Length: 458
Image (cartoon, rainbow, N blue to C red; front, side, top):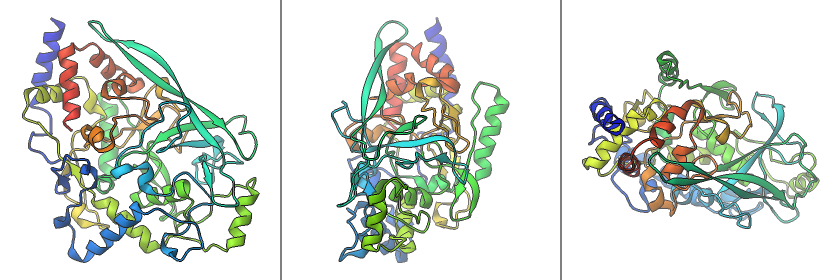
């Protein structure tokens, strides 16, 4: 009887969903490509011809392996003094998502560990660890030691499903070794982060702030236990606090600043938005090598940063697939019936966007509200980030998620890659998402399979 109720409720909600079967996830910036290159498609017909060379240049910089200064190729020089990887696509292969190492003996090839201690920096953000800064950088250029290594140890537990069956869930424990500058602070806070996909970001930046805040207001008014919160973060270009919408805790305000932050944090490349080399006072060799080679800062020109931003703006979003299949239709309805759409908003609209006008006036289907939500203690990193608490995470977009296995050879999900498939990711939901998680856990096998089929078709 309960199963019949779930099915009837789902079917009754199907007609209410704003995503029609023919919709293009990214509006005019969508692609039917479902191959390994699905996240790397450029809708050239939507881009003024006078910008084509800038797009190609931005793409080349994203794919470029950066080199150490000084270099005969100064445009791509500036790696280090400490860094994690030498190229953007090292962590975002084919513009997709990174993965967590399977064992403590494997290196972190496409993830990093954020570091901080209690307190806030000058702008209200996380307070960096005194000797190691705000993230651990494994490598150093000649003459500068890498800061050390982080590894993951996995702890597992089992979650029972209604009607029988169990799912193994794993959670990481961060361990450090070969630290070059002594022990970490006694009150250290850490957060392991897997690199997310980078397509569709321009469309998300073009969603009006008022619309995002309206979603938070509507969630609060609904009194269903879901109450999104906006993060307000430091905008280096505007020199003021503005709405955060990028990053796993919505701690970056714009695509341009997100890119500049990643270049500085992951590769040690300075720009006008992140002009100071990452050399904490305890790292004397780092500071010495900076003076010795006489590096010029910022290392990346404003024009090059603009071109990288343009490339990120226009990357197309994969269209959903198999939308006419009965199982996918039922799964879409069950997704709504479980309350998942409260946070994973199926439809948003972009407003006027002077930085790239073609992105404006689009109806998109990203399945995110760009808000922070309390996801429970199980997913907590206990590390605040501006207004985000240690239990809050930004709702990740789900568009194109069904192609993760095709593009990147895995479907590791959540902020630290702990979930190895969609069902594991759902079962980790708690806090504001607990009711939705329990509805999925209590579904029949056929209903869960339909729900998963829907996600695989996005």
